[in-house]
Image (tube, rainbow, N blue to C red; front, side, top):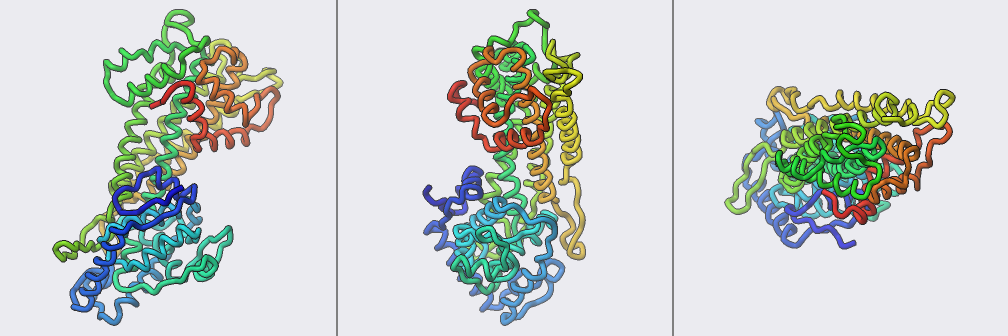
Length: 509
């Protein structure tokens, strides 16, 4: 693959995924290199001229009124990183660390931060050589930047802290040495430039968003298989119904369902078995479509944020201004992550209700109790619905908005914070839960199809059924299905099945 060229302007969630998961190489464009060099010259002129600039010739936070002499500017930056590197908890996954390093490099490439080119180049070299700092996941308030976690990244660039390299957890100095890289000594403004940003919450949010979008698309296919297994009525998805309430996302999901169910011999017409389906089937376009609206909102905010300058102060070359602002405040991402949690939790809620209809003999229209091949002696898939119910209930707790919280810090100088990183961390958990809820629905829907006749499935849902059967066999005899659920969830998160399905259904929304 060709390298991802960083210019501070054109990064997308898809490119972030490729760097994070596929280890795509990263390069800095020529124009960005020139901007970075010019901005650095401006910092050095400010230091030489004794100008009062936050974080360059002053302390940090409440210490912003403390003057720092020119000979102490480098020590100030080193002390900043060492003192702020106090995050706690489990290390962030390698993919998240790669994403946040990429996002920080892209923000610095915009040329507003005053970092030296050698420092930015080392950050990019660490991405390309697979030096992944050990960054604990907890400790950010989501304003003033993700200070504590990002400080652990900066430590490694200094040859301190810890990093993973080729599967080993090493000291930062050892990891750099094994990769053939040299640590740097931070100079004026550089420590602040590395940590004063929203890259923890935004990297978590970006990777989670892409997975959420995959789940939202495959959820339409899973729900179509469930509808067939329950002999549902696709009349509710007629185009004129949704044009009468013209939400584009609702219209798009209804179109998906019509394409996915085309050719099915298992669906029924109004009045054939029942006049109308329960809401968890009939209202698929309305509910799944509303989740798509949430995803569109999150994508818009994330795309802006991954191409934004989020540190403080910002240096503006054109007019020589240095302005202390608040672009580090994570409120936009906090809201986006909370909204994403709520929208995806609802996708799981309605999925669990469809699972209940598949396993409950009072609701399934003649399917065996709990889809057991030997009811009574065998419990079938009874308890999978319990697991699904547990996961959706957990999501209801996780979906509580973190962004409504705030707590003052730095002696009340930083008196309002976003909690955006907490929101993003919870979003990661929600999406993982949603993948398992959908996996359980698919497991049950495929088992139900065994009873009513797989040959009657629509061509598109038959592809989904066969993709599932390549990794999970029918539950003829009772067995533990934990591994089955985990394998299905991983396949759903990967998005690997969608291409084969679209080859039959046509492009899906």
